[in-house]
Every structure is written in C-alpha cells, then in structure tokens.
Length: 140
Image (cartoon, rainbow, N blue to C red):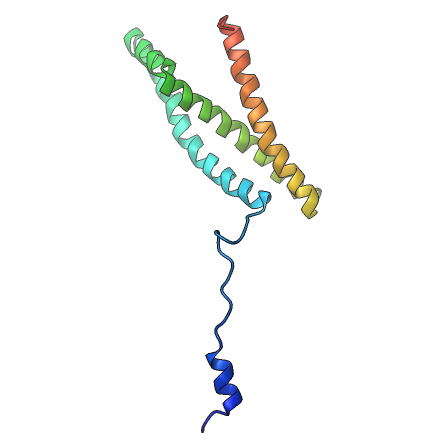
C-alpha cells in the first residue's frame, strides 16, 4: 500500500521545536519553586553546622572556641548568612504554599505577587536578623 503524495509531504515537514531555557523566560512562580527546593536541600547542610556547633559546645572549651573561630571568619559568616537566607526563604515559601492550599492567591497575577513578596521578605528578614544579631553583640 503506497502513501499518497500529500501524506508523504506531511511526514517530511519539520516539527517546531519546543521552547527551551534560552528562549523561554521562566515565570517567577516557577523560579521560586525551584529555589524553594534548593533551599530545602541547603538547610540539611546548615543544620549539620548547627549540630557541629552544639556538639562543640557540649564537648570542650577548645572545640567550642575553634568552631566559633571558624564561624567568625568571613567565609564562616558568609555561609551562616546564606543559611539564614535559606531558612527565611524556605519558611516564607512554606507560608506561600499554605496560602495556596486554602485556595487563595492562585490567580496568575496574585501568585506572581506572592512569589515576589517571598523573595523580598526573605531578603528583608535575613538582613533584620543579622542587624539585630550584631546590635545584640554591640558590634553596630
């Protein structure tokens, strides 16, 4: 059974390519969802740091001093700052999902506003926590 000329012509036409990340701009809700998953993973690492600090505090003065020194270096503070941001971002992402679970804020425009608020809120809370911490230590 031979194919008609029209069928053969249709089979030869190239199909359009799907949009990919170099063409498609991901919406803010998608980006925040991906970052929410990444921060969840980062919290595992950060919690190990908290556990190391607690174990050092429970073991000896020398171990505690060493961990405090490591966390006080510029790299240690940068990691702790990132951990604080990951914690705040993941928490606010959880609140965003809780709001969505009630059925509210699911409209495209509202969901985008909430996603932007999650990002802004996590940055603001992180800065407030660090400023409060430095003020409590008398460093500001």
